[in-house]
Length: 406
Image 1 (cartoon, rainbow, N blue to C red):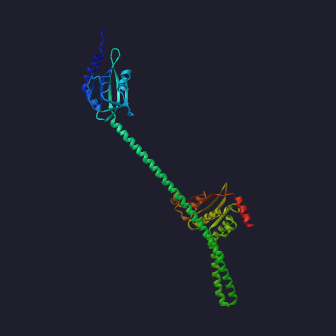
Image 2: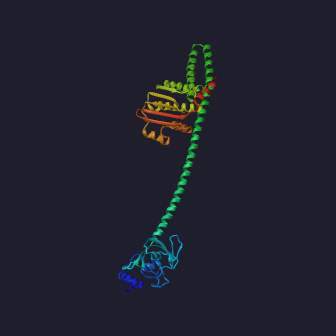
Image 3: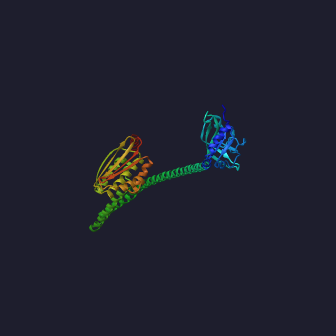
């Protein structure tokens, strides 16, 4: 029995292929066929276009690949004997979607994806060659590189923007802290100024008015009835002046706050407020005799601001004041039963600190300075203001106060 030679077998394959040469010649993908010895025996126009040359068919120097040079995807040189075609010929295993880079004679390079299938003898299955279809990936690779470059640029830009944002946020936070410290110092200075003016009113002007009253009494005794009438009018005006001076001094900084503490000063202030405003006031303070001085001043300012707002804006005829110690915090709650605050103003205050006057905004900043908290809620049934702030050992404060009194 005579077997056909390998050349005859490949010839038969090529003859069958030649019947379809018009079809293969116009395929968008490149294709070529090699024998088992790696010699190129057929290729189409697209293959020559990608190779950048037209190798001589059947030339034994043109083995395994029509290109002069091949490279791996990482750019390293690939020997022709190590090409996917050579491996497919030696193993008989098909290769699909493996990337290689073709080096053209003009120095340019083309990325391709190869698809290699063995050609077998139909009768006994022997490998008689392989056919390689390869697709140009150059444009796709270029687009991928552009996308990667754009992605790297976007990531770099994003990192720069994030860094700039963090820097801006840090600066804003620093400025905010600085403003809060300044606000706290300004309010502390205001408290000290109020205390000084109150003392001046009480110690200086008050004494002068008292001396003037005693002088008027002496004049009243020394003159007649007509002069007595004029002096009586002067005395009445003097009495009003003294009352107003005392009231102004008390409103600026009640002496009881320094002398006996917040609880006593607050009760006295609420009683005077009820008398002057006509607003019924219910006060209950479950507090030690003394608290830290700064805490007492802050609580008193909250009380003053809240009662002033109730008198000016709420239309309420009643006010309720409650205070007590809750764990390591002291709390103060002031409630009215008036028309309430609109939800727009309330939301503005909660988000921006504006909308309800500078007094409460300033108090909130002072509370933040000492890790305190202000809550404001309101409805048609009235408004509730509640503050809480950390407090040191009240027993120690009480002992210190008692020692100072004795």
